[in-house]
Image (tube, rainbow, N blue to C red):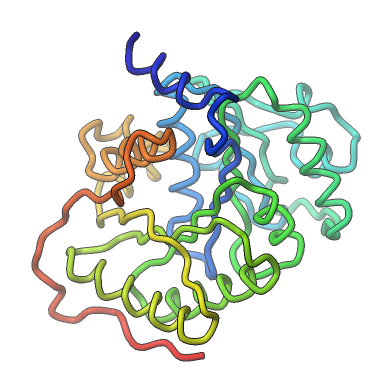
Length: 286
């Protein structure tokens, strides 16, 4: 049995703890959330998993931009049942299937929580032949996003080592946890420059969350600052298509192994052990 066959076997329905729907969230924009969601889905697809990437940011989604697509239809049309899933999904040149958000400048109605719940139920029912669904959320806090997050098997909370991101990430975790105390949410740090920076941000986030909420999100790992990410975004290709040995690609591959239940260790590219001389981190408070 090769690697792809083993991975698909680990994700079979007989595995009760498998994650089938992953939501990718952040407390603020500009932290690399969509880039992570897109490349996570791409790597899962490259591992042989049939993957659907859903861009749930109806106001400013940009997955189609990252993937260099100009889709004719979008998630909103599917959500209000104008189109079937088959007629809405587009496929990239690499074979990744995407349910895109409306293009910039397209005005659509915001989905209320009831419509969002119906959307997820319909999507979940109609994607049973997929191995993995990755949902890229809009940034910040919203009731509709909480519906999708709570219904997901796993939520990845993206935070970078900057005060505003840490603060807003904590605010989003607080909202998610108070809405659903059983939600499975893991902290994923992005753009870190050292192991010390990772440990510091993780410990401060955990300390504050446990002090004021009684629970902190789990920790899934960290992604290093990586020039390959900028190159990939500029070329509108997956990171692996720009630099195959990118540290970020290595971490995403390791995450897929964690996702499949083959490892329990946090994922990390083991960046430099030297802390920034001017770390962009600070204390956060309730």
